[in-house]
Length: 182
Image (cartoon, rainbow, N blue to C red):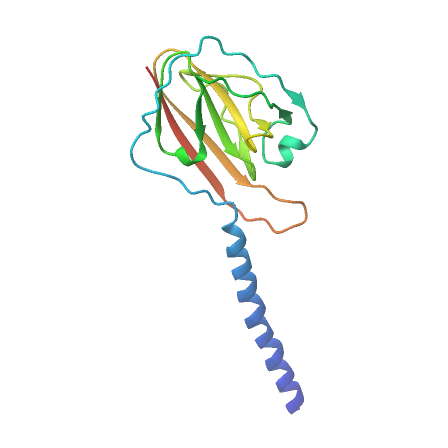
């Protein structure tokens, strides 16, 4: 009888080790892929208008873009025009000031499952392909042309990029950028 009591205590103490270990593992995994953001002063980058905005040449590589978190399998390796304003995830919460006709390019890093904002955003006209993969930048890219004048907020959301049959953290990352067109 004494033997079964010891066995019962050992079985119960096993749960006191495993459950906290699993909780710690899940908390550690939920921190994977977090993105530092900057707050505060608005960005003062003002670009001159682009003379002509050309559509990049895209090739489709089945599974490449989506495996890295982009909404599209289009891959573009064309360099950006010199007059383009490049916006990165570290500028989250900032105001980007541009002139009418400027190409505004959002580069969001591989490793998150990015979701595309719905079409054009106010004074920003979405260029196609949208959400394509850039091998050079190792990022998902959206291109907008500043049309008219005013402000538009562009919001991107991302979730964890998970592999099938593996534990996956549950979070939604929200990046918001305000583009002021003069």
